[in-house]
Image (cartoon, rainbow, N blue to C red; front, side):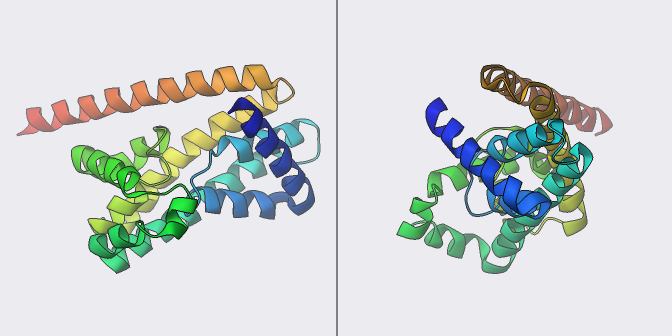
Length: 207
């Protein structure tokens, strides 16, 4: 798996070198929408190129966040427009299985959304396996688009910024990048759970 990710990262680095910021935005839009591949393979190489002086790290972060918002919004509006029944029927098609999207993954994201409410569009962006698909149940539930964009922006902003810092600092050392990426993902999961518990307790105290 590490070899595969390294190969993908090398390929994407070439795309970003050629297409620039437009390539970053396009890849992050896809990453947040139809093809849930790791955002690490986009932002880390881009940040490394910034460290080498080929790109601007602040623009990498901004474009990465914008791409994430666009991809998440596509999922949101598809789910909002088509509805739960149609989406679940579509993911049984071979095309979506080819894109590594299946009913089980959407059920996981929907259960997460139902359990934690609108805030899950923020915390879900920090949780592996939920990050790319959390916007679908938000569309099912017809969550306010303003709230959806706000929480998605915050979650994506945190995630993309951390990845950019890692890529900029350790981009030439793949072992360190892999090590710290895993640790950061774990910390985000813990942070998300703590935040959810605190909010639930606060709501109970207000009742």
